[in-house]
Length: 148
Image (cartoon, rainbow, N blue to C red):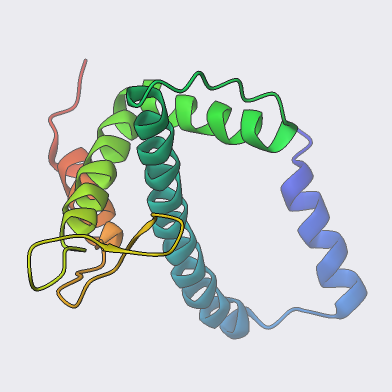
């Protein structure tokens, strides 16, 4: 059976004489770390998009996406939200993003704002730990009983 990924990598190995399995082992760790960081970043940014879109809607805005970029982000977010496994992950990432957003208040308990009104990070800001959310959800999925 034709496997395009395997065939592509075979071509790379031949063209670049890349046959050192110990190097591949090292690279696996590097690439997995990068993918994990990227996934955490993506979930955080999609949570931010959900946050501002919901805020816009709750304040009377009527959102018509219409641009390819916005439509794609909306599509990816819907895939995440509607999938039974990733839906829970996305919701927990959103909750963690909300916790982080709520830590933006200043020492006086009031929002710190930019000239245009955007809320900025106050002195007690605590960034979201989406990586931990991913790890926690992975542990839940791996410990869940198998369905027959």
